[in-house]
Amino acid sequence: MVEKELTKLEEYALENNIPIMQKDGINFLSNFIKSHNIKSILEIGTAIGYSAIKMANTSKNVTVTSIERDSKRYLEAVNNVNNVKLDNRITLIFSDAFDVKLDSKYDLIFIDAAKAQNEKFFEKFKYNLNDNGYIVTDNMNFHGLALKDEKEIESKNVRGIVRKIKEYKEFLVENQEFDTEFLDIGDGIAVSHKKGE
Ligand code: SAH
Ligand code: MG
Image 1 (spheres, rainbow, N blue to C red):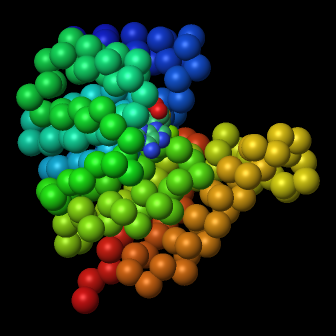
Image 2 (cartoon, rainbow, N blue to C red; image 1 turned 30 degrees about the vertical axis):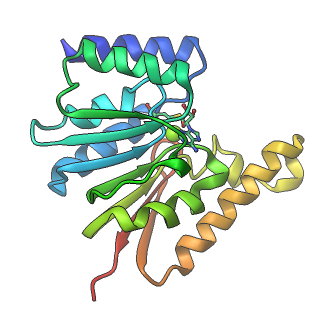
């Protein structure tokens, strides 16, 4: 039943230009959650709840908290989560992530919101990570644009976002607290693991 709803969400997202995770990316993330025995997840950027549902659907032991600032998308996500009866394991928060104060700790933090803000999300929410936890960031390739020469990108706005993603990559490479692996899966995924003492 969930599978059927997920297919509908994939079609809806495609028709309405909602940037949900690519198939390869979400499959990787689902397997990662299973193989690393992840139980609690914080997601930044719910959109219509597609990835939250996918992640919660990996196991009955998984809970997801997800933050969305767009009211229309948030309401759609609430509806979609209720439809698949996962409201007991998925908590949706309607807010700008920068205004949210969370005390809980999570095994996995999934950053999939405004691409120019990745470093700020990382720095804010790393305190909500359990020891040995992971921070996963989506769209490191930004639809392939982050792999291009900046001069080839016409839009100034897009160029700015691409520059930010490159800076974020540098930030992760040089980070003393986390080790990061960059995977060429989906739209590019970064997996950052908190280093042991
Ligand atoms: N994770 C979803 C896709 C998220 S798309 C999936 O794969 O199914 C990115 C979403 O992040 C958008 O809906 C956008 O409104 C939201 N967003 C961007 N910046 C945000 C912020 N600062 N706080 C909360 N949500 C944000
Ligand atoms: Mg994404």
